[in-house]
Image 1 (tube, rainbow, N blue to C red):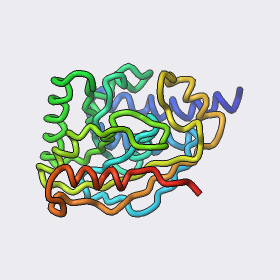
Image 2: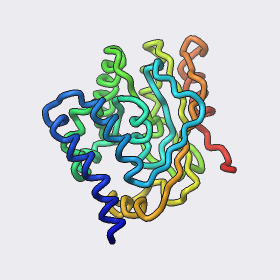
Image 3: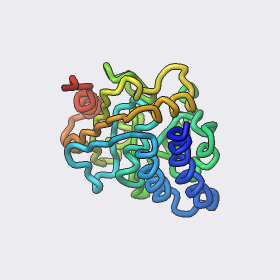
Length: 229
């Protein structure tokens, strides 16, 4: 019980420290960057980074296993991203998340998808670093889900390079899929150490591809799951 209370304190303290800045709308992305860096060890996540995540590349593109994925990537640099609308209902942080550079989408609503892609494009044009999960949902990491291609097509049309970053974990409890709710998953994370690996692949530039389809296929190839040793 004492260990669990200490774990909850490790999560809540950086969260409450961040909320006033988010509520005021001041430096939201740097605030989330610092929060993510403090939160990962509190969750028992042991992060290993392989390759070179390029901070001069405006868009990072990753596969998606868990709600922890964006925290792991945002701990490396401040970024905005696209997230499902349900995130706004998450305890503590959801209410302020809209101020942080996160664009929320209802994936079943075509108008919502179009609007969020317009905001995503505007963020990239403004020079903001962004993070994209083209699967649009979490998986157990055995294979990639079909891509929502809009975000990658936006980057292609803007002529912006993007870097694939492949996420993997040998921990069977790390993926967060299906109907599992957030708080039970948090308790599961607290109960054990969780190794998590980010592999930064070589950046891809639209100029090296004849069309958006070839560009998107290159990201699928870079993010395909590899066998764990």
